[in-house]
Image (cartoon, rainbow, N blue to C red; front, side, top):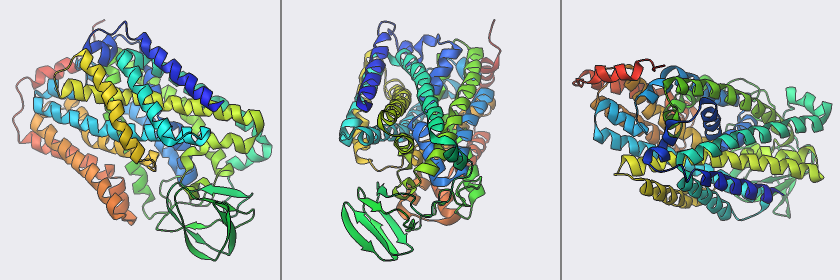
Amino acid sequence: MTGAAVVALVLVTVLIGARGVAAMRTTSDFLVASRRTSPMLNAAAVSGEYLSAASFLGVAGLVIKEGTGALWYPVGFTAGYLLMLALVAAPMRRSGALTVPGFAEARLGSRALRRFCAVVVVVIAGLYLVPQIVAAGQLLTLVSGVDYWVGVVVSGLAVGVTLALGGMRAATYVQAFQFALKLLLFAGPAIWLLLLAGPSLRAELVAPPEFTHFARETPVDFRLDTELVLTEPTAVAIDGVPAELAPGPHRARADQVWLFPRGAAVPDLGGGASLPVPGGADWALPLLGTANSTPLLATWSVLVATALGTMGLPHIIVRFHTSPDGRSARRTAAITVALLGTFYLFTIVYGLLGTVLTPELYLSQGTDTAVVTLPGRVTGGGTAAVLTALLTAGAFAAFLATSLGLLLALSGALAHDLMPSGLRRLRLTALAASVAVLPAALLMVRVDVSAAVTSAFTVAASTFCPLLVLGLWWSRLTARGAGAGMVAGLVCSVGAMGLNTALGLGGTVGMLLTRPALWSVPLAFLVMIVMSLVDHVPSAAEDTMLRLHLADRE
């Protein structure tokens, strides 16, 4: 049933994509759907594109793993659109550019800056796109048992073919359809699960019990090598082989399945892990990283990355170029806030249900599978199969919608901003890019999807956010200043995250390297401002600013 739901979704996606073939004749048709998309359709498409696998699966998993403080993630995701509504939507549409790098050249008159912006688009899109394909492959493996590579190849090619057929127009129809589908398939099962759960389980959702002992015989399927610290002698079965383990540290290998008996004490996570125990006192605190020494700094850093990173995501910004005018772009952003707010309400339900029913996933580092695991824990038989199929189709729709937007931004950067473009080259680039990311997805099977997506937001916040805010609202910005600030933001954000991946530092220093937006974004702004103040302002800057901010004609 689950496989049939996914196949049907892929076929509908490709058929909708084929609908855009007849209407696609020019580069503008491919990249911005000829700028004729209505606010309601555009907002549904933006929401469908934005609600990625990380939103559909990851936020609920983060609630299990990090506690109620993880709800700051959807707050930041949604708040980004309020900032976009106030600062970016209308003037970006009035710029007349087809892509973010195109805006950089139109505003600052530098072809070199446009090429560098295209490189940044490739970095951001790659950081965001690969985890989507990984999540799709993992999801299909979990629910249908197919090999991981099959899910990766099917997912990547479905997106590439759809985009090559119909471009932005096809992507718009697909993403709007899939937002409605995701909302239905996310909200419906959540309500159904709550009704099936019964009053006693619903009461536990208000204050989940601390996960100190296994309530039932529980298999834990480890996704990564994990160090466990047992607090008492425990009889387990490791891949079906009984073992009597003494108190102390033990290592669970990736892909091993440990079967813990009912009533056994839950082991602690070793190896420097500092995750709060699901349902415990630290888990219930309203800040991120409550088991660390810097929960407030961690929370602010995530908010800066998610809210300001939303403003800098190239596949989201290009959506406002599809609007007929600046007023329509603002309406699109306003409607999007309402649609996203409605969707994220249900992540709370899944997060709390997962904390009560699947808390062992935090041991196996597989919390992003909680949503599709829950139906089998609440009910059984055909009902569980139906709910799992619906949620799987919704999660796969999340992957397809987001990947379409990312692949479109990536194709535009490669075939429109870095080299002379034409419609045929854009189509071929979309197919080639979808194939090119498959090896990375195959190699990164064990990547943390939520962490990888957050890194894309961090890079976007440290590069394009300062460029857009200053480029749209400060006439003194120069190409040299913008380039220097973007280089500083890119090097600091990517370098800091890469450095901590290699060194594995903890404490405040480790947090600031893992989540560098708190300092990399202000640094990028500062470098842009200082370098622009000592540079010569182009004579056409004032005229360009007037064009960006003059009200639209009735």
